[in-house]
Image (tube, rainbow, N blue to C red; front, side, top):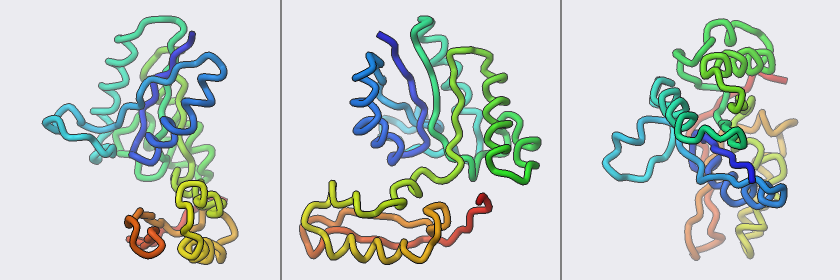
Length: 198
């Protein structure tokens, strides 16, 4: 059986890997180990990490190197789910990659740079060109699978996303479960950010 070790940036990516990706991969005889968060989690005194790189990639790079050494099996694979935007400036190849006008070229060059930095063919670099959460907003109707009986709130969320021609242009939205009161879904927008990739 092949095994996959995945480095993730945050709790959304971790939940996606655990709840959706893992069952799919198991059907192909691939075991997904519990995803590991980026960032200096070893310094958090036992608290559950929330991900994030804290303005440096060095902690994450050190973790990746250590995980590659932990399992030397040729059947092991390693990858990552990290957003392209807001990468720390010390990410391998950052200056050259981010100098490109096209976001897909940026990701391609940066993926090649980290692959070269780690120097292990078992590592499969992957950068998420658009924030992972934007994928969830591509079809808000599917939130009904998790928030049963909350149709009014989900309709409001869909209405907020409707003016945007692509999910990438949807402003950053945080979605919270608010318990059994009201509709149980609460959205708010802590910031507005345009995405320069079309």
